[in-house]
Length: 227
Ligand SMILES: *Cc1c(COP(=O)(O)O)cnc(C)c1O
Image (tube, rainbow, N blue to C red; front, side):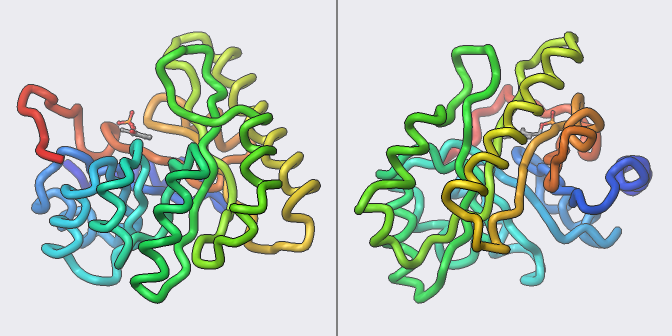
């Protein structure tokens, strides 16, 4: 089933967008199956779960951390994570930098923006992002690199609202690019779009779509995953 699902999704994800298979809560056997179909980008939202899956699976996988990151969990993913999508404060960025130094690497990160009309979603607004990016403390961080932005649209059947929110994230990206990253070819990622809305996200400029349930099936949150 994973193979068929993957093939269907891949036909719908067009370059320059890349597909992240969101495998949170799913067993390593299912990830291995996707891997055997050629999938190399995987997304997880719990640090310990991602560490354990990294240990169990082939080492040419690119691991994307897409969940809310707690300071005390950074150490579990710092040695290997490819991209952290969910930076929403200077404090967490400093923590990532600290562990990147310890691991002698530079860790790529996205700034997560709050573009949905729901109260519950994490993320920065433009003013907070400005404060972060123009701060002296940020300028000192040499082992993290901001390569773009991430956001989630409102969970709603209203496609126009979803489109406006993705459009807003693209505007935020363009604005930041102009004002802070004009000389940087690395600032190029817009992570937006999930199973229900990745087609709209691509039309609005997504470069990374994060698709879970359409590949692996619905998630069962009946058992709490230890993190
Ligand atoms: C779970 C999750 C996804 C994938 O959601 P689906 O609807 O299953 O495709 C994408 N992004 C984030 C941040 C997630 O937590």
